[in-house]
Length: 125
Image (tube, rainbow, N blue to C red; front, side, top):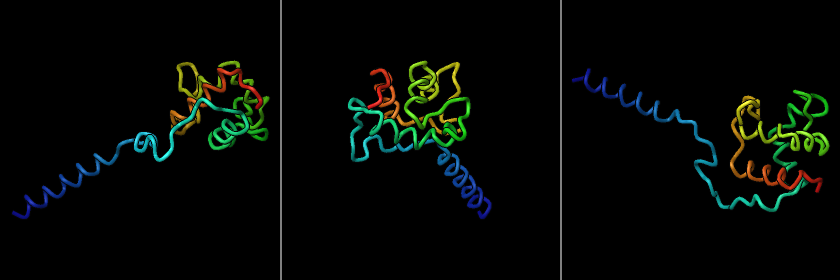
């Protein structure tokens, strides 16, 4: 009887462990956690800079500039926005290095904001 209980406990524990190893992100778990995503009213200074600062500037600063990409200035970011590298990287498209490199893909709301800014011509606003 003890073997059955012990075996059941081990099996239950293993199933619980395996079911908890799912790669969730905040957006999938809480897509509208109190706020709606507004990806239509975007500006470089108020919308894009916070996203880039949080996700890109560690590796793409003027001091480090991995891949010869600088994202902490409008001139540097607009260059990769206008040549397609920004969108290809953050949207994880084939032929581009997935950005942030080694991290999770940006939230869909942030991707929408970046795409809208690029579609506007990546203005310095």
